[in-house]
Image (cartoon, rainbow, N blue to C red; front, side, top):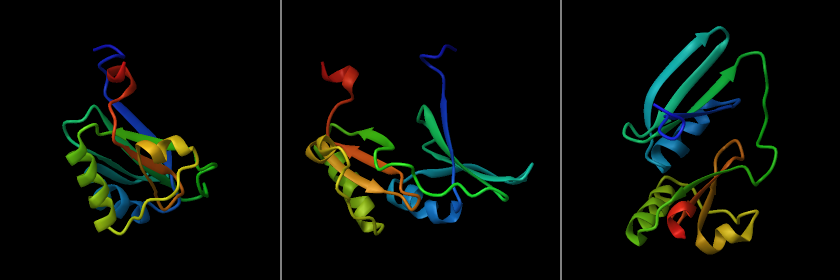
Length: 135
C-alpha cells in the first residue's frame, strides 16, 4: 500500500460526541464503525461508510474543552456530480432536521449546499465532480 491508496482517518476533538451523531449518522448516512470509552482518558467514535477509503473519528478528552470550530471555513466537501444523488443527500440532511446555511465562501453556495454540525464545522454537499475529474 502507498499513500495514494492508503485509507484515511480524519480525527478531530469535540466536547459532545452524542450531539454529533444525528448529523453524521442520520443526516449524512454514516455508520458507526467503532467506538471506545476511557482509553487513557479519551472517548471516541469512528463513523463512515464501510467501503469508503476514509472514516471520521471524533474524540473527547474528559479534562479538556475544545469549543467550536475556529472559523466557518473548516469544511468537509463531498462531491456528488450526479443530480439525483446530490438531491437525495441534501434531502436526507433536511429530513434529519438540518437546514442549509450560507457558505462562508460563496462559491460553495453556487455549486452545492452547506450544512453546519453542532460544533460549527461544516460539510458541503457539492453537485460537481472532484477537481481531478473536472479538467
